[in-house]
Every structure is written in C-alpha cells, then in structure tokens.
Length: 483
Image (cartoon, rainbow, N blue to C red; front, side, top):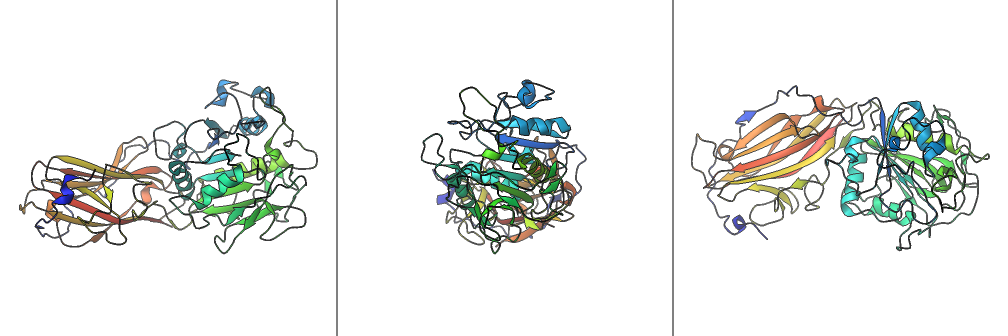
C-alpha cells in the first residue's frame, strides 16, 4: 500500500543552504564486535542448508551442528567427527588456526544469527542440491564483494540427488548469473554441463601459486569420478585462473580447479565432490575415499585453497580479500542506485520506491525517508565489510531535502547518517540534516570511512519527522569506494 504522502506532494519547498547542521566526523572510540577478516583465527562456514546430505552425499564435517566441537572438542582422527568431509574439518581444526561452523538454515549477510556470513572469512558450498533464494544469492555475492572467500564445489550435470529438478551445475551457474549484485559473469567463468566419468587432472606449473604450493603441501593432480569442468572468460574477469586441468585441455577450457576474485573477495571452484569425500560418514551412504586417493593430492588442494580463501598467501590469481592486508579497488555497496528495488538494503516499508512524488537523480528508483507530515521514523541501512588493507574508503551519496516547514532556525525533522558496529552500537554519527537544509535538486555528500578498514559495519540513515508539517529526505546514487 502506498504511503498517504504520495498523493499530496505538491508542497512548497522552503529553500535553505545545504550546509551541515551537525557533523560527527570524529569517530567514537567504542570497541566494535570482532571484525570480519581481521581476526587471527580463520573462520570457515560449511553450508548444509541446501540438501548437501541428499542421496549418497554426506557433505558435512560433523553431525554436530552448528559447532563440530560439540561432537569432539579435540579431534585427533577424522573419525572423531562424523561426516564425509570430516577429514577436511579435522585437518583444519588440528592446526589451531581455524574456527569451523556448519550452517543449516538460510544464508544471510548482515544479520544477527551466529552463522551469519558477516561472522566468517570463508563460505564453503559443497555440492548444493537446492537453488539459493534471491536473498541468499544477494548475501553470498555481497559477502564475497566485501572481502569474503567463496569455495564452490560442483558435481557432474544430472547429479540431482534430491530429485527436485536442479543439480549443482545449474545451482552454481544460477548463483553467478541470476543475482541482484552482479549477473554479468562476475567471477569470469561458467560451469560446463558435462559428466566426465574418470581421470586425474594435472596441476599447472606455477611454483608461486599459494593454492598449488601452500602450507599443506604441493598439488600435482586431482581426481575426477563423474565430475565436470569450467570454461574461463578472462575478458569478463581478468583475475580468473585455471590451476588444474582435465587431460588434453588448457587455457580457457577444461579447467577442473580454478581461482578468481570479485570486489575485495576471493573465489575457488572445483568440478567434482569426489575429491573431498573421505569415505566415512553416516550410516546408509555409499562413499568413496577420494581425499586419500593415491593418484592425487586432493587433501593438499582442499586445505591450501581454504587457507588462501581465508586470507593466507599472496593475491596471485585471486584478488585481495579475506583479511590479507591487501586491497582491490572496488565499489562495495550493493544495489547502490536502488534500481534493483527493495533488495540488498534493509529499509522501512515504502522507502525504496519509484514513486512520481519525488524524482530519482538517475534511473527510476531512489530512497525516500519521511515526508508524511506526522510523527514518523524511517530507516535505510546496509552492512558492509571494509577490507583491512584499504587506506581509502570514501562513502558518498546524493541528498535532496524538501520541506513544508517555514522555520529558519528550528530543526523539526532530522536525517542522521551513522556508522554502526555489527552488534548495533553507534560508532559514529557522520552527519545530521534537517528541514533547515531544504533546497532544490540533489547535492553530493562525502565522508571517509578509512578508519573502519578491517571491520564489518552497518551504514544507516534514520529519518525522524515531527507531528505536523512534512520534510522529505531523498537519497540516491550511493557509493563506498575503496582502494
């Protein structure tokens, strides 16, 4: 239902200079919650909310969820945890440098759940078998864009383990091509619709690559046991790099394992789930020990890639996200011009709109806070992670204020622009605008958020209107540019 203000916007604008009434440029010293990508412990989330246990699959590190430590707090053997991925999980746990959790519900980014992506450095998708929702795809893509690591593991085409009409090839391609953040081949590759019955794909020769030559060993070969490959498109993303290739293939075709970058984050893709299967798991599953296959080095590949995604190693082939202390120039806000409608941002009902009552600066959509002429509070917010290596983090937005107030001295209606910690604590009030700032057209406002590098913060606009005459705060074309 449209707001009542929409039908009565022919209001006289009280013009005034667009100077700030109050600025809070000096950041408060309040300690934020533990920031993503700045912790010394690498935080890895394994997904189990998309039928990863359907059929013979058992793609979990432990039956204890979300915390595998509840099954065994100090595992020494992979059988101390139950799951076909327990070898992977236990190997990471034994280093003392990783905190592992399992997600069993919808994936979110910027929420309050203990398994919200803002609490992790890396997300592992081990052969998902149900489609991600629109909200989940937005969460995953923004997580990577803002510095997270994404590990996508597929299987062969037709591996529809829960018989819902979707397999991992289709599901992961859908994530990359049908999301609200960037659907224009964001990672620079597509997954092939193939079922390759067997093989031992070989690693390229690159002694400097941290995934092939990492702290967990040297990678020489992997394993295909009914899997697929990917086609690289470096013209779409120059960071994409094939590391392991199907026999007879090289360059842009037949990549069985690859890495890439997106925004400030890192991406890895593996074309089969057989290499991560350790042969043990829950009763009733037919499993195969690809993890320890004597003809391959799958354990080293999985573990090195996890470390690289979480922030270890150089940025070769994968950008600079995940707490590496480096920074890839990027614009971090999703749906920054509001043209995707009510997505990515959290907003009061009707705030993100294409109503003709006000005008967008560009495009059709904009954010319209207040303007009712009665006591109202509207909010607009988005959570973002600023990579720790960035020395520049410039927040900007265009603001238009119009009002029916006539006072030239009293701020009856206000718009606060604030930075909040992941726990909701106000870290800084960047500016406060009011009816006294009314003027025709949009004016750009800019602030430095460089002091929040390495932190996950929420950018929040709060419009508060008094009990009588209306004031509208109209925002468009936001951006958070880091370098």
